[in-house]
Picture 1 (cartoon, helix red, strand yellow):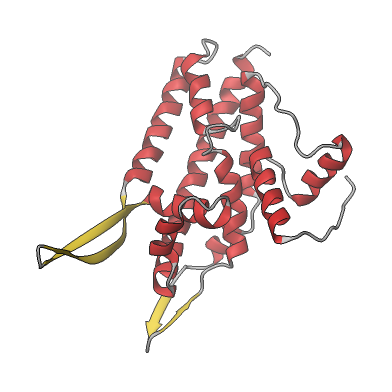
Picture 2 (tube, rainbow, N blue to C red; picture 1 turned 90 degrees about the vertical axis):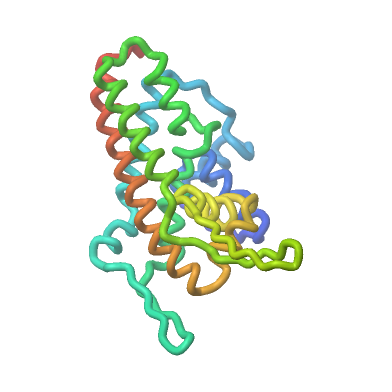
Length: 240
């Protein structure tokens, strides 16, 4: 594959970053190479068979395993310290976190061929897939959904004035809310800026929630790899 180096404006860079995520491209070079080959801004949507969707899911799962973040997590215990108003931590760089999150986003967006919703539809409706594999998929999906719905350790205390009286209120955030606030306000889109400001705006909150993000994406990765194994067992019994 040829490599192309170009200088991008901020707006164009954001557009290409989104196109890479939506199209399932490995990186900017792959997207630009495809762009130049086809002489168009985006590839036309392609209708995929159930087998092709499961195969594409597995390829992206394999890609997910290759990111450097996992080595960093394996070799470093994420910590942070507060001393004299100063916060120190050994969290990974933002780029190490963003790379797997962009791939994980492909499994979250309903319009993508390999979204969990679309893969669920395959297991729900394809009669060629054995019942035990369907049950295994549903169990793993439900377990992961339960994890996402679980309240994280992070909460925000606020004081609300009602009828000249102060009421203390605690807002708890689920694992899914912490994940989506980072993903949809900083990395892929800008639709959840309010939640992002609450969760990541100051250094203390950011350090705390980035440690939680490590836990969330590790669980997300484990779930994706479980589905990959189930897909590998299902594909041989499916007709092209």
